[in-house]
Length: 251
Image 1 (spheres, rainbow, N blue to C red):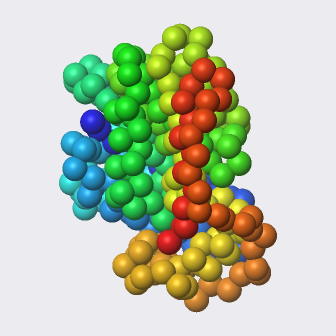
Image 2 (cartoon, rainbow, N blue to C red):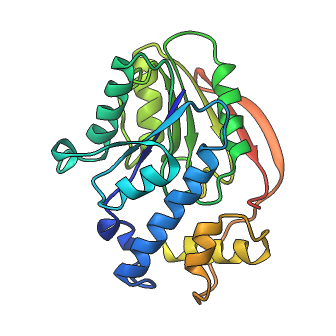
């Protein structure tokens, strides 16, 4: 299995954080979060290699630092997120890669065992082609996608992508499953997200999300509006796909 990490150009990323962060701070945060995600991905034995998909000038340095591949160039300049990621899945499929995991670069709390849990859920899905989705906190977006082959499912990242990915898989009779992880679903988009992240890092071990921690240290934000997080696991049928919903603590 290969991992795919799409990254926007840092200067254009996370504009919803503009009320609390300068452009330079946002760029530093985006890089730091991406490195924390890479720290998690590179420690998972089931991931053979990683492909960063980005035209960000610093992406080459990051790829070299982690010993991973980079897909960039004129084909990504104006193609948008989904075509850019699709170019990566097509490339991997042509190379004979059987499975691919797509993760975003803004989930800095992700740990290797969170990713390993996704792989376990994916392997448990019978059939071929097949795919597994991990939603965001709202249940409307997609924060992780595993597909076999890498091009099995049309990519619909963006608004309502979770439902769109499910519908695309079902219409093409692709075996589909879903799995939730509190850390994978916790992406950083808004000032409230950032405030909650700061709150979590204050009581987390020093090595936890170390790159992001270094960048956000000293930031003072208003208290976030957060939902209560409980610890429970339930498995149920939703439509005609398996949905394994896992709630756990963020630390």
